[in-house]
Amino acid sequence: MQMLIFSTKAYERRPLIDANARHRHELHFLEEHLTARTAALADGFETVCAFVNDELNETVLGRLSGGGTRLIALRSAGFNHVDLAAARSLGITVARVPAYSPHAVAEHAVALVLALNRKIHRAYNRVREGNFALDGLLGFDLNGKTVGVVGTGHIGDVFAQIMAGFGCRVIAFDPASDAAKPYASYVSWDELLGESDVISLHCPLLPETRHMIDSAALDEMKPGVILINTSRGALVDTPAVVEALKAGRVGSLGLDVYEEEAGLFFEDLSNSVITDDTFSRLLTFPNVIITGHQGFFTREALANIAETTLCNVSAFETGKGTLFEVPLPRLA
Image 1 (tube, rainbow, N blue to C red):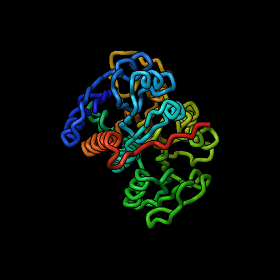
Image 2 (tube, rainbow, N blue to C red):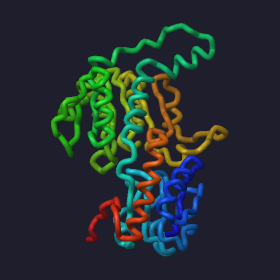
Image 3 (cartoon, one colour):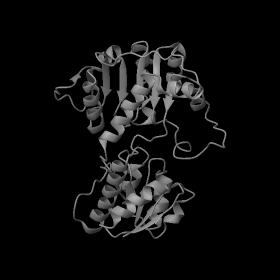
Image 4 (tube, rainbow, N blue to C red):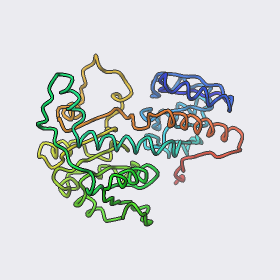
């Protein structure tokens, strides 16, 4: 099956090529993002493969459908960037990678917690400049502290287990699950906000979770809380978090995602001026660490993403095997 793959980097191509040895599809790679301007490049391709910052709105999907596209194969678990109603009306199937390596993202979230708590980023820069003073680098023992996990799917569950291994008291909030776990206890949203020394977000972006961390939620948190988001940028109301950082209510912030990351993340902008004033303001805080959506970026995860993506294409083509189709809304 012919497959056009948008937004590809060199590090993605080898895993896809390796996985394709078992599937034998015809792969065509593009570095360009999928947008209304570039959608015409997909004419004649039944399958289009897209990533998290590609545009899959009604206009783009209509153009793809007109060019013969029948399957959108997402190289991601999230699908909030897809107009599912438009896909449904156009008869386009949307498939995703529901799980690739929960350990990759969970371990990255833990790395952010550790770096922020022990000021690793600041210590690294000091030592390189010959400054070995310890002033301003004071952290705390994670052992015995309360860690709040928001969302206990595959990634949140692994994160909870790791933090329990540090000797933390782990509490969790997840409206979709409250099954007892030996390493975490479920509490209400208000309890999690008020009791946690560390809060880590591991939930999908849905209408009800958009800006779940807003001014009201931030006001309920313990002063000095470490807040981590490795899920979806829009879970956090960024201007509200900036104000909470300025007021000292949020002690540290670790982000691997950002609400307006499209056009920023996955690109080398080192010779460009970043015009996003909110993002630029975040970069001025010494107690903020931002990574460019790299939580998924391990060898194992890339291999799993490639294999599942191509399995989806094969299942769509042959009608055999598992197709991880995104449930599309019913037409009115």
